[in-house]
Image (cartoon, rainbow, N blue to C red; front, side, top):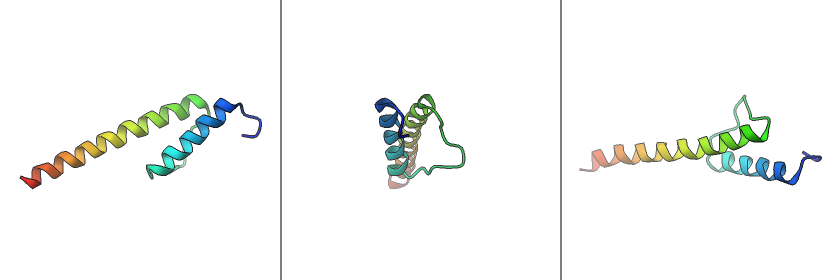
Length: 64
């Protein structure tokens, strides 16, 4: 990462912070280039949003 461009460093740091804050975990298979990291960032946001929606919907069924 020492010789990486500022764009690449920025994407790596965003990837690290999103995966850490959403407690998804790093796993055995990790993205190795910027395109893969950007894809994982968006998929993490999407899947976390869907999970929150599903949990909320199930909770509303039992609150009635």
